Length: 274
Image (cartoon, one colour):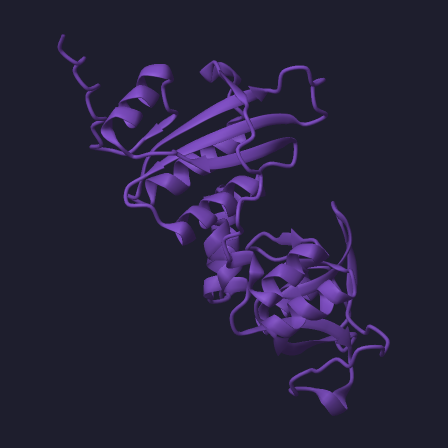
């Protein structure tokens, strides 16, 4: 009888990612913790030792072909590395798992401009990350909210028929918001800049109402939205004001695609008397 491999936290996050991009922030945080495992040619004299890599030396790690090109195979545990080798019918004593700090793996592969594929060939499913993302994870900048330097660009926002919503984006954002009560309502628009030709990637503008506002949580929201925005441009913004009059006006102008359970939008203020 085949004994299943115990699931660690990274395994669970990778499996959850196969169902929804809403778990991207959690997945990335687990990816940066602890150790990861890479495959190197079998050497009995270095078995069961932690691996280190010196810049400039030949890159010994196994690279594989994926749907996104060539990538270095990385695993969440030694058991997952062995699972992949067995699935691909690799002869024993051909490769061995080398253990390295997750931060070291991310930084090393990012600097070498290599894509990383995690748990490829495993029952958990797999994920791939490009080198620029690896560098941001290694440095921690991936989790730091960036200052918005777009200024006060004036845009005309157009409402979207629900039938035309970008499904993958809306589903991921909806699922993420359901997990966090601070998100009260979310709107999605397209945008048209007067006098400009249509852009190559269709732009979407997501407007978020948070109560209370939370900069780090909003950044996690951004990570989720950006993870599914390969076919279009996504722009995100918090509502300019959370005052009842402003919020009521937003609900009057457009219907949000997400409203938190139990949230009651404020009533529009009564018109001023004579």
